[in-house]
Length: 329
Image (cartoon, rainbow, N blue to C red; front, side):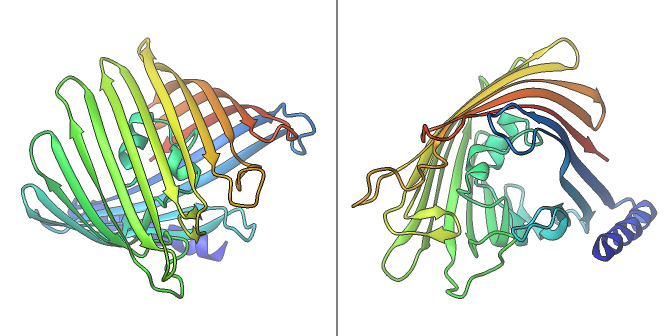
């Protein structure tokens, strides 16, 4: 609590500074939800939750340099419900009109584009983020190159463990990149690849393929992703592979309403000597159907139903109803 109070005081000071020179901006985002669990034998039937709070500050130094700092306040692996993590602390340097370099604790580009097309991060994370194919931020450097009006390429080198686990004892680095092409008719395509040594004998590799459409109040995305030799981006494991696809779409109705749906399929391979896939207890299919309304500027509200069907038929399939809210200041 003392840390949270200190961080809040710091951002209030940033806000006062921003008002003085008009070069800075304080921002915050809150994810809130109410959920009801209809799953058979569910231990927690109903709950109110605040899943995530972001506090941040942008500052424009000049026409070429800008900075951004963001704190992510949420649950940690030790069980604390509200722990403050430094998520981004980056410098963006515009070398030329079409070249930008970012370094520090930077936002990752692995699933940022898909997140924009999906459009409901406060409801549910993108497929790669939800299933730990990568982290949304990490320490390192990224170069972004606008090769044409339609084609963007970025290459990065990162520690590879994410913003909550700065670096492991091995000191291996992750390298990779994105290639995004945006067609004039609203369609887009993206290729993603990264690689990082798991140890001296094998590499962890990550590939992603995405096709999207965004035009005339409609959005559609289809993606396929696979991580090889790892149980997650920070847990290398020789021959353990995880793959899956995600399909989602949305349509605006009326002035402020949207309907949306999503279908995910997650699967793992069966290791030598085993009879079931190594991720058998978590593999399965997810269905989300929902409605969103924009209550006002900075306030979105969503009503959605979720069903998760496990590959392991001995487990009860999840069935839940959510009311989610995103509040931006």
